[in-house]
Each structure stands twice: as C-alpha cells, then as structure tokens.
Amino acid sequence: MGNVEVRPARTDDAEGMARVHVQSWRETYRGIMPDAVLDDPEAPARRERMWTTVLSDDRYAANTFAVAEVDGRIVGIAMSGPADPQHGDVRELQVLYLLAGHHGSGLGRRLLQAVVPDGTAAALWVADPNPRAQAFYRAAGFAPDGGTKVEEGVRHLHLVRPAAATTPARPA
Image 1 (cartoon, rainbow, N blue to C red):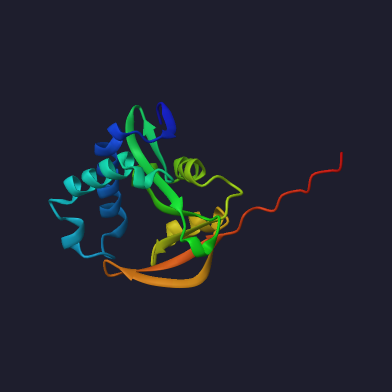
Image 2: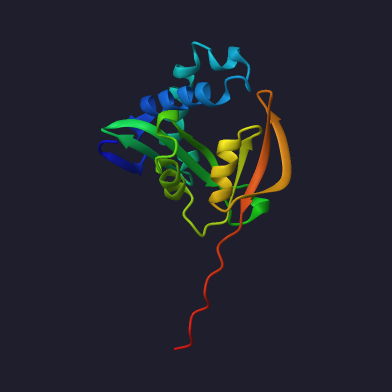
C-alpha cells in the first residue's frame, strides 16, 4: 500500500479533504442520493470552502480532525466534535470517509480511533441503507438507539457507543 500515515488535519489539507469528501460521496451514495447532488460541478469548491472554514475557524476549536495519507496523498478524512449538550460528555463522529480503494485496509479504523478514541462515549448518524458502514460501526462498538432522520433525501440511523467501563483503581 505504500507509505501510510494517519495524522491530525491541517488547514493546507482542505483541498485534499474536499476531493476525498466528494469522491467518497459519489462512490458510496450513488443510487441512494440524487445524482444531481452527487454530480454537482460546484461540489468540490463548496467542500473545499467548508473544510477551509472548519479547519481554521475558532468556532470549531473543540473538534478533532484527521486525515489518512498513502504516499503523501489524502485518501481518508475524519472529524468529531462535542455532541449536543443534552448528551453529556459524548463525542459525535461527524465525518468519516475513505476512498473505496482503501476499504478493508484498516485505515477507517485508524481514522475513527484518531478522532474518537476507544473508550470514549460517542454517537453518529449513518446512512441507511449502507450495510458496509453499519457493519464497520457495529464492530467498533456502536449500536442503533432508535433515532432516525432524513437528510438530502437519505434516511439515517443514529448509533451510539457507551464509554468503556474502567477497572476501579486499587487502594494504595
């Protein structure tokens, strides 16, 4: 697979992150999401502006961003942030996209770990149907909580993962 690295995203990654975001949507959501959305010629520029903003704007300072690179080229992206305040100390996985050619490589798991470490209570929305992603998240400890929503004409399921139980400290 070449030289592989998962690292924190930087502001100069916005163009590569936008490319992965748009290409991943096209690979994953074709037949689920309207072609007009997937093939919008303005999508790459719009996503680049979005990533430039979230990577540099103080409003997103509590978010965590990561990229996966193979031979210096971004092939995966991830972002998490605080969930709604009513959910307490929970991280929300807001983005995890990996180019299809890298599915099954372990990079998705590494990206998830980079933005929502094991043991962290977390939540996310996943497209339905999207059996591959749903299986990936189940393997990472997520389970449906019954929540659903529709965005861009696509049904989404809400998945949650509780914080891992910790072993009580031994008395000194």
